[in-house]
Image (tube, rainbow over all chains, first blue to last red; front, side, top):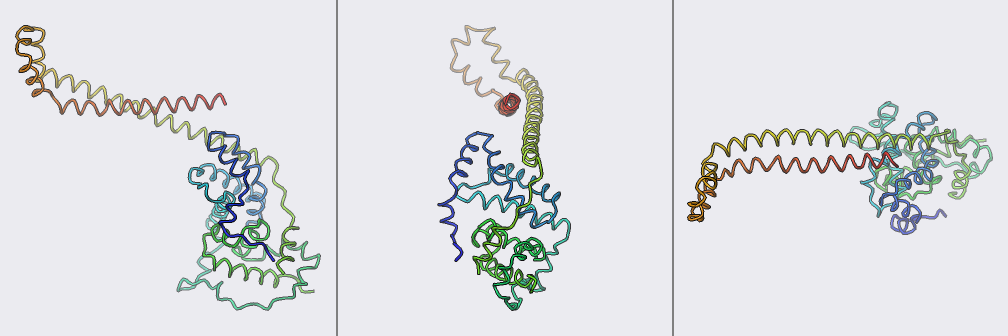
Length: 198
Length: 135
C-alpha cells in the first residue's frame, strides 16, 4: 500500500533542514541558497530530463528553474512545502519550453466543448502485474516512460520517483485533484500497455 | 501492484548531472544579482540627478518669487526700520504671514523631499554594491 500523505501532514513532516536552510537564507545568509541548489539539483534535473529527454535542454531548463526560484523567493510562502514550490517552477519552465516549441499542442487535449478527451478514454485492458516484474521491464522503463504522454509521464515520475502525493502533484501541475487521480490511473494503464508482452 | 511500480521507479537510473552545472547555476545567479544591483544604482543615479535638477530649478523660481513678492518688501523692514518693527511686531508678523508665498514654498518642498528620498535610495544602493564587492 502506497503511503499517502495529505498536504497538512507533509508540511508537518517537512524536512526540517529545508526550513532551517530557508530561514538562514532569508536572514541574509546568501550561501544558504547554494545548499538548496546542491540538495535539489539532481531530482530537479532528472525530473526535467524525463520530460524533455534531451541533456542539453534539461541542463538549460534546470538552470532557468533555479534562477527563477532565486528571483521569486520573496513569493515563496514558508507555510508551504519548498519542494512542491520548486517542482512547480520546474514544471512550468518545462511546459513553457514545450509551448514555445509547439511540440505539445495542448489544445489537442480538449475537444470543442473544452472537455479533456483524456478523461473519456475507456479503460484499457489491464495486463497482468507480472509484466511489471520482468527484469527487462525495469531496464526498459526509461524508454517506456518516454512513450507516455507528457502529463502522464510527469504524474508517474512525480508520484513514484519523487514521492509526491497526488494532492501535491495537483498543486504542482495546477490541476484539480480528481483530474490528477484520473490521469494517474490512465498513466498506469498506458504504462502497462506499453510494456512488451512476452 | 503499486509496490511493483514503486520498486520499478526506485530502481530507475538517474541521469548523470552535467559536469559543472551547479557552478553554472550559482554563477548565473551571481550575475543576475550584480545586474540587479547595477540597475538599482542606475535608477538611483537618475532619480538623484533628476530631483537635484528639479530642486535647483524650483529654488531659483522660489527665490525670484520671494524677491518680487510683498513678503520680501515687508521682511526687508527688519533691517531698515527695526525699531518700528519691534514696536508693531504683532501686526508685522501677521502681515508677513499674509504675504508669505505659500504656494511657492509648497512647490519648493516637493523637490526637496524627492531629493532627500532619492539621495537616501542612492546611498543605500551604493552601500549594497560596495558591500557585495567585498563579499
